[in-house]
Image 1 (cartoon, one colour):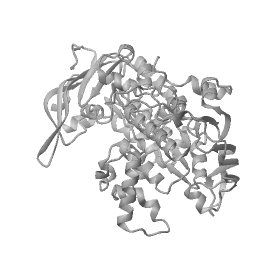
Image 2: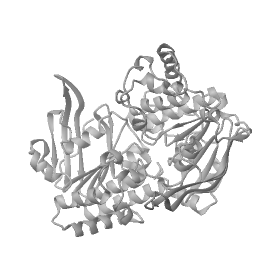
Image 3: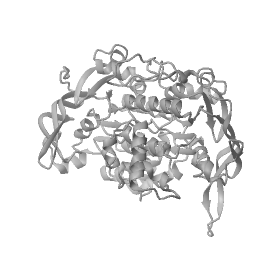
Image 4: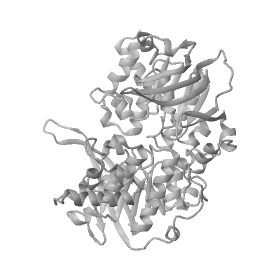
Amino acid sequence: MASSDTPSSTDVVRIADLALAFTSDGTSTPALHGISLHVQAGEIVGLVGESGSGKSVTAMSILKLLPTARYPSGHIAVLGRDVLETSATTLQNVRGAEVSMIFQEPMTALNPVLRIDEQITDVIRRHRALSRAEADALATALLRDMKIADPDRIMQSYPHELSGGMRQRVMIAMAFSCAPKLIIADEPTTALDVTVQAQILGLLKERAAATGTAILLISHDLAVVAGLCDRVYVMYQGRIVEEGPTRGVIHHPQHAYTRALLNALPEGKTPKSRLATVGTVMNPNEPLAAARHTTPSKNILLEARDVTVRYPRRRDLFGRASDLHTAVDRVSLTINEGETVSLVGESGSGKTSFAMAVVGLTPMSSGTFIYRGTPLEGSPEARRDIQIVFQDPQSSLDPRWPAWRIVTEPLTVNASPARADLRAQATELFQSVGLDEGTLDRLPHEFSGGQRQRLAIARALAVRPRLLVLDEPTSALDVSVQAQILNLLLDLQATYGLSYLFISHNVSVVRHISDRVAVMYQGRIVEQGSAADVLDRPRDPYTQSLMAAVPKLSA
């Protein structure tokens, strides 16, 4: 349904009956159908829906960032100015000064060859009459506002030297740098752990109230929307299907699609049960299989003994490390056969460094891994049994290779199988992860985000591993696709007896999939135990603070 809201003099942005189509090679593909929404000064409005529903297209239209888009009807007004009729020169002055955008993936939004200080101060000096020294001081203060403890070091860093959460905080600081009237935040907390997420969301809310900045928040995290937004719009297939005060939409949804989105969330569901996905009609608590509720084997598959990982902070003239940072500090952990052990903790706690050490991508400074009773180091056979699925499948899949070649690449290490055999193996792998074999020859960019994650999982399964290391495998996925991937992982575990080392900052997901949970803080495990004990009855003060920061749908 279209918005029935009446215009207001306090509207910072108003979209009225907007239709959009993309043109390519003489063909027109409709993407938006009569969209209407508005955001008032000081208001935070949410825009939710699945990938492909039109959320980001709507947001980027506000800044006219879609060069191949055509607008058959409708209007976009920002501070009373008709964006669709505004010249390119005027829009350049509007972008960054009056309207800022926080993009979802800061690694691609930040310039990889420029230091952070140059990138922030360039934006500031483009729109504000400040000297370089004044711009530097403002940029440093903004980073400090983003809860960055050492802003001077961050200012001198390149994007690749920062964690995903740190890069996102830089993007948010940049968005606030020119005191805009409207901030469009496209999944601004996707890469953030729950404690930093809570800080950033609190800051967004505080700034909106104090400065009158309007915020349009695009998010697939309905718990974040529930805790932050005054109103919410729900999008489906290029249309607004429901809107209203956030509490009413979340707790009393009227449209079937909104109800389906909420039903796909793991929050409140029986652990390891099948999650409903949009378009399915099923009991959300129906078990995937009887094996879902069996107890994992007590046989230890992998044991970490006092594992320590250190990185050089700086090197001398001869390339020798002169200062070391301890990322993982004497961590001991066991993973049993058929068990899912999750690592949780804030960014920089050492989770990913430990995971990289498990798969041999990061050398240990000390300690050892014992795999099925023997040392893991120097055992190529054991290394094949442990595979990894990275957080961002877009950057971990070769963009030039067809899908069949990507998923069978591990089979070509130390062997030269025939092409026909590889395609046959790829077909089998596609079937195991729920991909259509008709897409074997597609390139990665021709798949959706959820399909790319399935490709990454298929590649990891190619060598028939016993242990999968899953580094934030659902963090960038909308709730329905997240449910599909969680169902898939549980199916694969039941079918092949896989063990998982699961890393995530989404506590609802961790609770749903895990047998045991270990909490990391400053490189050490401060608490571990069954998922229910650690997440529902935390004993360590850090775990308690972590759980207190988790956004809740009932907020």
